[in-house]
Image 1 (cartoon, rainbow, N blue to C red):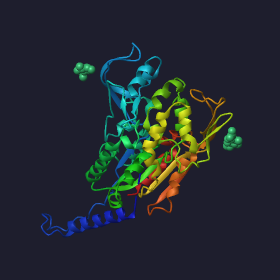
Image 2: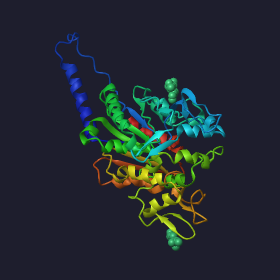
Image 3: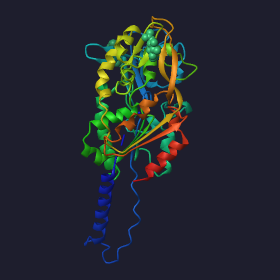
Image 4: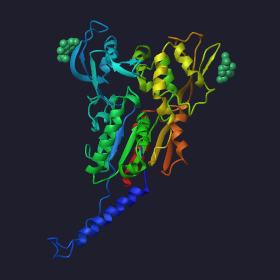
Length: 423
Ligand SMILES: *[C@@H]1O[C@H](CO)[C@@H](O)[C@H](O)[C@H]1NC(C)=O
Ligand SMILES: *[C@@H]1O[C@H](CO)[C@@H](O)[C@H](O)[C@H]1NC(C)=O
């Protein structure tokens, strides 16, 4: 799951100057007969923070009124309850009920997705930091997300809800089906700016939250951004997608948990248009690059469509086409950007099948470098904008830090502390 510059600083200084001049010389002040007290040293305004989470980084609730279920043990009706991410729902056999409630269906005609009939979902807590500090609302330690960074901010004098906010969203879907998120985000930024003495905001984004924020910023004018946005701090931004998404379509992902089965979770994971959006970007993977191989053929980047046909999931390719316009637009965010990412961690680079028929097969993973989830070239893609934007871009690679570990890494916390102390 960002950021900007000197003109804002200048405007702030100017405002501050006008304000103090007004105070000193206002002729009708009741205290006018006394020499004016020296003004207290001006507290630098803290830039309010909005957290933008990545794939799987928002809470989700469901309400059920289903006419049928995959198993008799599954509930047909239930009032609003926490669907994502409650580990108790992920054990066999309950996981089959869970998948039926969280998966999406693709409509080829409207090119949009919907839930299983009888399942309503909603993302709770718009603006609330706690829903992205903890993915699991019971605040189970395993569900900690932006919590450590929020605590660093509180140490600096920040206050939750006042100048720390969260921007959760339905991460199952890509930007094309998240249009309301971008509308709400603009409002949240403006409201937060006003509520904090007209102070421009800082986005702190993780993983898919970084390209989500990029899409948002690309849609705003330069004037709007220089007024309302101070900077973006991107952590492990999946700027140009990841081979991990190809792996998910091919074989699912066990979310690095021994208790979960990739094969079972695959059915749910491949139904997400966001997984298609996060496929490797053709701007950063050459057409001739081999993504998967069998004994008698290679699937190159240019042959990704054939790969989807051969794994018998044409829908994945259709969803890819729906999101390609976002992938193809790689114009800079035009705000001050701090691009932090982990590096040097083994990350899937290619799939190697033993047989020529690949549908339902589990390939061997050929590893390369990245942060364990996102490939190095995608994490580094933010460097591409240097020279294409007037806004400052800083990149910092952290050796051996993985995709989620970056959220609790001491060097990262110190970096955030230092940057956020600057007005
Ligand atoms: C559940 O669905 C049935 C028909 O599908 C409908 O008659 C009923 O009113 C619904 N219940 C609620 C609580 O929405
Ligand atoms: C697949 O690509 C590799 C290079 O990545 C090449 O060495 C190999 O000969 C190719 N295999 C086939 C069957 O084309």
